[in-house]
Length: 519
Ligand code: XMP
Image (cartoon, rainbow, N blue to C red; front, side, top):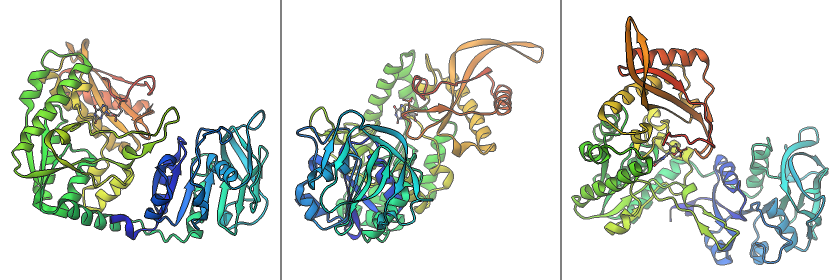
């Protein structure tokens, strides 16, 4: 119901690694789009969605291979503009009567320049000086274009780099306009949605209202439980649901004793006192730290924390009478079905690390009001809902908390030291205006004591490691290139201000081969 007021665009996914980027480019233009794997696209589904335009993504297969992915043939009679990209271009050509070839000399990978051959609405204002840099990544090439198509751009390796049947608004490009290496690619998407009649009606203000209506419709007068972690996703989900159903929502904030300095108080105060949410502050530090006592194996730590978390959450949730729903901050990248070429379609749904398995166990239905959003859109929505900017921009924090930043045995003493050191480090980063340039920064306390000298005395205290990385999605990461001055000043501050640490190192491992966290 919620999305019916929007203009919609359908992206048919043929399995490209960068399909999500197409969606990003479109969302930036305030266009609502959905990615669907080609296997699930039927004409009934298309008619139900009623898209104003369709995009065929790239993909790893070869259209020359028998049984390779196709779009439903009738989609070409549906009457809306279609843009085919890379594999999508080749599918279009093949299905409309052209010919694609593979073999020697047809591959082209990397940067290329496309030259303009004729005017086309898709290309309005795109070419600078008659040519434009693009990113090519294809093994096959179109050998013969389909009837009705004409050539509008060529590159040395792709004589049919841009073709179109302008009368039917079918467009086909060999390159990837959605990637960073096609610097002005966004302009093509802008032109495409404009010629398809999109009005840019996908805004956060509209989304907020529709999401609220949808939550009310789904939940009725039932009660909802939400596990609040203090992270951005669960916080925004809770704020949105609260706006929709008020006190029918109860949040459970599990304090496992592995949080950062003042973190529990800040989260609970903000939600309970400033935003008037019903928040249960589950103070279970003793339970968690007790079970972790003497444990040093990283996987064992994670398993203990994960299991206790579920037990604790369930215990508190059971006390909330009549709860029928569990709210989760699941995001769009977690629910997009990915296309698997080894077997049938595979679905990657990341269960929330904290409450995985709980809904079935407790017989709860899910409320997932962020399912259509990307991470940065969640932040926009958070701002729209009035969550403080510093809260929305917070670095990610792992579910197992400080446990995985404390290699070896976890002791209360070490956690205390770690909290203080981490607070000084983050303060330094904020003071130098670097916080928003960094994906994640934290201190790990090392299971080793080293000798130092302070004043006239010998010290024998813990060493710590500072970590700061840049990343796009946490899957890969680079260490952040702090200046020597910054590192020196930070080490001095930590050693002076935090009793128990007498040595600081900076971790310059990228991911891979390292991971971001130490465990
Ligand atoms: P790694 O250490 O695997 O971390 O490079 C990648 C990102 O994931 C976060 N992380 C977790 N987040 N539960 C979470 O919610 C976890 O168990 C967990 N382990 C790692 C990590 O902080 C980084 O942002």
